[in-house]
Image 1 (cartoon, rainbow, N blue to C red):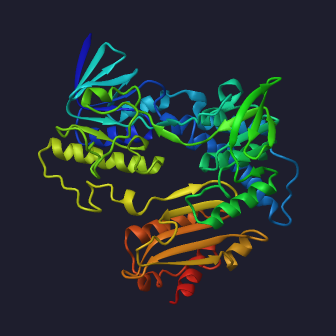
Image 2: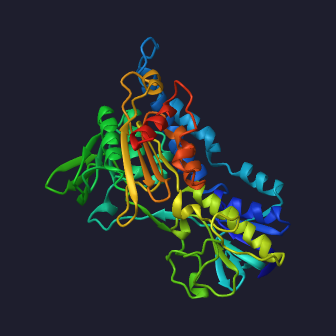
Image 3: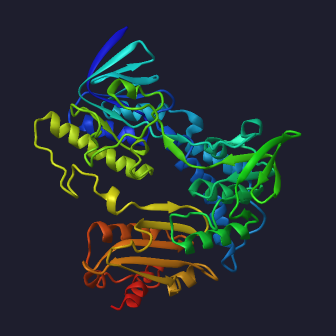
Length: 464
């Protein structure tokens, strides 16, 4: 048994852990980052980066085809799409991430880490890391598999398989209408697969306004995706190396692969939570400072998907930066409060969480999706039909919504759906975080002719 002592021990070497470790090290604390797989984490190798690399060529080709005079012929070259994706993921080589960590004065240790006591982490059962000030858990999440008869007998893809595969399946079934489900449905359809998307509700993306799911279905249908709404998977069986899927209502599908995209859960099963009185597999509930609420002593922090607060890479990195700053300040004996919108509180988790669904059309949203019961909210919905969108693509079809707190006269939610609307999102995020009054936002004049003109139309429709 060997031992080392650090000021801060960070478990989980993905983007969230990297940010927590970097802030701690920047503050002069001796910091170690531990990961059992690849430094850079899920996002770098199996999620955000490779999925967007798979989607972008198809989106670009479709955009080009919406403009007359552009010489666009043929289909995507799948092999070149896969090659470009592999360049972004460094083919799984995390040496660049390790080099970055060392350059940021962060030490790295590779292995399975478990919390084995207060301020104590044991790696691979025989190497103890002691933390003078804090342990930060940034282990992310893992796929949540449904209990369906026969699912373990058929060729199943998880999200990692869907983003790392280098052969296009002839027939791909997808179970789940969330972000992973719709993005991968479109990516693989445009790469040449026949895709069947099975969803339980009337439309995908149920957390968004109805028009978002409806427009995404239109886009998927144009690409040949067969959407089975108000359905579900009852049972599965193997048939000649393929999968036979029995759907709600008696319909049967035969697919070569089934991507199960039915959600994720905190990756805490093997973390040793029982050593601090918590249940393995549970969510780590945190205060806005990142401090885990149910553990005494003020030493255990968490950030990212493992907290269940805002399971998005950028929000996890944001929370990690705040937790790192809190740890540095606390170590220096400085007073640390959790005042809203201060550097020591991840307030945006409650009010302004931005997200983009990178389908075609894109869905970009921040804040509340719809007026909330009991709140002084008013929603304004309009088509994205401005000079900028008309020039951007022939037949441009999109919608926008803003939700206003009528008592404070500020935005509390914005949703855009349409081609290339992701770049509109940060303006909405700033308006919500900054609580910019609408009468002042009226003076933020959008440039002509851009899609940002939609802001003018939203405010005019509201009555300004």
